[in-house]
Length: 289
Image (cartoon, rainbow, N blue to C red):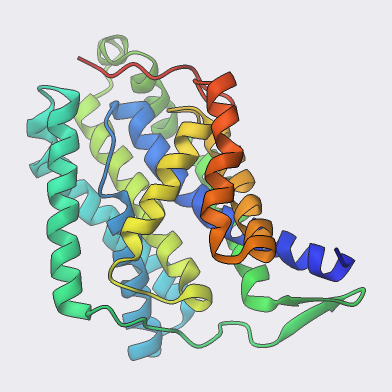
């Protein structure tokens, strides 16, 4: 394999892995704190992409505005979902699963009716390519990697703030956190808002590279579900590591086997699940009663 092609695959893998990492971080945050699986996470990703498309490509606003708007809009929608739907389905784990599946289905159908199944593409944010030592890299993909790292760093910083420490306290023990004066309901709303906001901004991030499509939420959710299972249910470091690994496997697999890369991905990860059923950095997940 040529060195230039190797680094091209490496950049592509890190770029897509970064997107998986951002979306998976949001889902892992919700799963770890609230002990629920948000099956609508992919739809927040899709809606974020269309928010970015509408603002940047239709209204011709700066890309930064599209990113911020995608995060804020999806954070608000996530908070509304938590406050008026999920809050009343805490009777059991599968109640919240069904609630988020229903929400995802409704959003998906409305999106297909509204946007159709046509791909919507955005003009390059940073035109041209960068050449390093004879290796040609798309500037948009390099920007994607940089912004993905910034978002993960921002989430890490958020978890060290007062609110982030409250989130971690609720994650460890909700009853003990309540005795310390932490309002779990408010923390749940904040957690859902941040988790869905991360999915939204990831959708806007990928827009210059892959565009927006009404059914893109379903495909990425399958990948994200695989990420958190491989990384370890509820483990943030595990999710980030698994996202990078899966992105690289997809990139190199597509180069060698084309459309069969999904099969290569699945076959390469099955042995890991056999030897590490709890994931890379997690423990076996017990469904809450």
